[in-house]
Length: 158
Image (cartoon, rainbow, N blue to C red; front, side, top):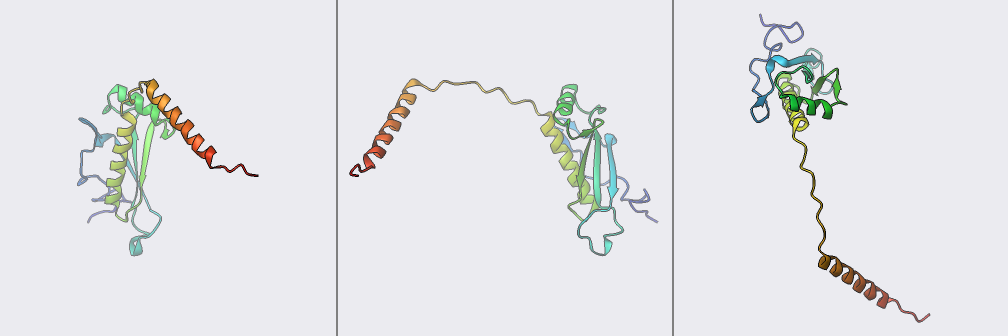
């Protein structure tokens, strides 16, 4: 007999059949061995199934202890995700779907996206450029002409 997700047995308790591996960036992927799953009852619609299925998913990933990320990426992620981490662990929740499987997929996709954004290299610094003198003078001339046009509209016959 197959078990359910709450008793820890059966198809609901493992992650076989999950599409993957989830690529963070380049050749770096989320290692399945470093992911921890938690399941609970989701709020919202569910029909007859609602009070018996644990469809809400929490995916935990220990950013501080992971061996999957290069050291530079790990430092970047810890710095950028500081407010979202609890003891170095990043938690992602998904409960949009009624199916636990689809919520698990959503959580994996979200985790990969958050890590990709957090480990991205910093943007190149902007090089300051000077506005050419001719363009600036033309702008001031046009501004002056616009002011003259508006001043000419007032009637001073009062």
